Length: 232
Image 1 (tube, rainbow, N blue to C red):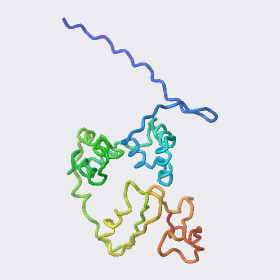
Image 2: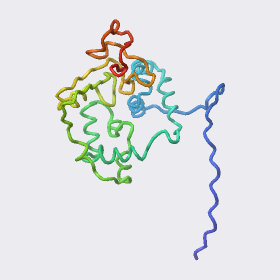
Image 3: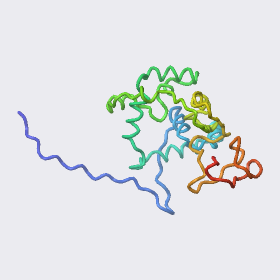
């Protein structure tokens, strides 16, 4: 006999995660560090690339504090900070098509032989992207996006040697068909740390560019020329 279902009980109110205020100690967060977690933290620049060598050295000596703090900081999703719709639409239409999860593992083994398959099998930062794309189901736009750009417009391509997302070697591919391009490698910073000096950011060292603005002080000092000519 079928029993008619009564009205659905409302869900109990969720207790919001307490954000520690000034002078308060934050709530403790249990963190687990493994190879996959470390890889994703490093790719996400947590800690910053300039601090990563020290963090790895500390970890090898039994001190995981920097990585554990970074892991704990990412345990709370900040609503509205990340555009999941835009990201999935871009990744699923331009990045993922034409490749499969076995292709990811094969490429990982080639790039990092000796790393465990459990780490290599997942794309850093988007480990569940292929199942997500099966649900997102957006059109394949690779024929529009994977077309080399050919141009004679002057272009300056700046890469950071500690960039673990878009490596400095990618500049060679980016400038291959740009006849009037210049590729510059900046020692140590990542792509997130390379900024123009507009909007109140710090002036760049003059030795960042091969041909800096005129009147710059000695290499390593701050430039004082046109902000549009500087980069950091």
